Amino acid sequence: MKKIVKVALLLLITGSVASCNLDKYPDGDAIPADSAFETFDHASQFRRGMYYWTRQCFSSYTVIPVNIQAEGVNATLDYGNQMGFQYMWTFLDSDSYVEQLWTYCYAAIYQINFFLEKAEELIAADDALAEGNENKMTDAERVQLNLYIGEAHLFRAMINHQLATFYCKDYNPDTAKTDWGIILSKKVDVQARNERSTLFDTYDFINEDLSTGKAALERYYNGTNAEQWELDALPLASRTVQPYYLSPLTAQCLEAKVLLHTDQYEAAATAAAAIADASVLISDASQFADMWTNNTNGSEILFQFYASVNEGRSDYGTLFLNDPYQDGKQVQPMYLPSAWILNQYDASDIRASTYFTSKPVLIGTTTYTGVKVISKYPGNPALNTNASVNELMQNVVVYRSADFVLMAAEAYAQANNLSGANQYLQKLMDARISDPNYTYEPYTSIESVFEAIKLERLKEMFMEGNRIADLKRWGEPMDRTGQDPQASSLVVTNGLYLKIEKTDYRFVWPIPQSEKTSNPSISNQLNW
Image 1 (cartoon, rainbow, N blue to C red):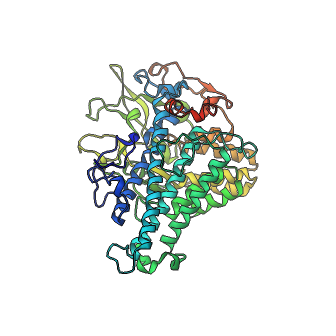
Image 2 (cartoon, rainbow, N blue to C red):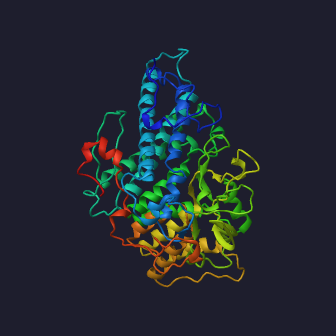
Image 3 (cartoon, one colour):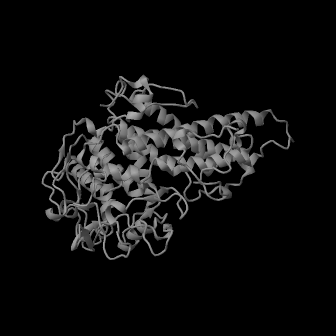
């Protein structure tokens, strides 16, 4: 029997190759390991697989649990301990979300490493073929293969950055060469039991992949170094970026994040500002709501993964908008927004009506009216298998422009540039506040503008998976003290006014128990 290219961690992946779908794993037509990448078509199949594997590392089970850890939500009496360990900060190294993110990320890295290894072998074998050989790749195929290799490097950088964000301390230039990073790998070796790198080496590795990926995407889409890439074989007009595919902009987004997260504030400000300056923020309330409902790939969504009824959907809204009878008459949320978070939004803020709405709420056997629920993820109707039932599925959105507008403001503030910090904070506020009489009043000190920027990040990026990383980067506690619920009779008292000090070890997720058990090389390199 031929050995199929799959690791045990990816047995959950099913589906067959579809000619136009980049997210389906090639299961029924999977490529045997002993003949993998004998042709360009094999590489194209694996390219679609890379999009599938990487999407798993950014889906709802990454975004939602880390926000349940943070401020602004209260567990209802019906929450059934769903994400309760995150809410109460009692999660352990055996926690399913701690395990899941780690597992998906390293499974994806394994597949990417396999792709890169086999792509090199394919190129070497093709170089050895004489011109005119019927099996030799065309110039256009070589161009495409080089693009796929660049995408693989960028995806690996994105995944390793995701791992570092969750499982490592905040980057400190003074201690990065001794702080633990992640386990790095470029090799395809399921038997490897590698040690953790330092945090410095982790980001060095990320930057190497980022640089390689960015250069490849820019050469392909922007047509630079055309002679090297033989781009005459594929006219520039046919190389426009397709929705849901990586682009030079995607690489720029990761670059800005890495710069900010490694305290390179002036460079981060320049990189994030370039993205912000090219972005048009939505200022119309209905258009803003439409973006979150339909995942329209408009001016604010910079990169998201493809989704359809049959693939790529991710469940973001069930904790907040579950309809137990599927009749549209009530919802039974496991978490409610606190009164405190609701009060942070001005009445003319277009985010308020999109992120929160009033619905009849079922708690136990009683239905309550006038309760605000989290409606940021209302479910994309195009992703429902049954048109009459809202399954609360969405596309997986990775980068959107408002994040980078706020990153530019933060980086300028950290670089002690008051004008720059005000400029980008104003760009966001002018778009989000609909009151025609609103006028932005510039802040007069770095301290005051930075506090305003931090508040706007909380409000803008609410429930998008950023909050704990933000608090860790700023060296601030997670503090629900004094943050009253909408109604104390609807929520559990445990965790209600929880405060986790900034020095608490749980700001860094533990290395999963499964990794500790199988990899003795990290026995003295654990987070907790």
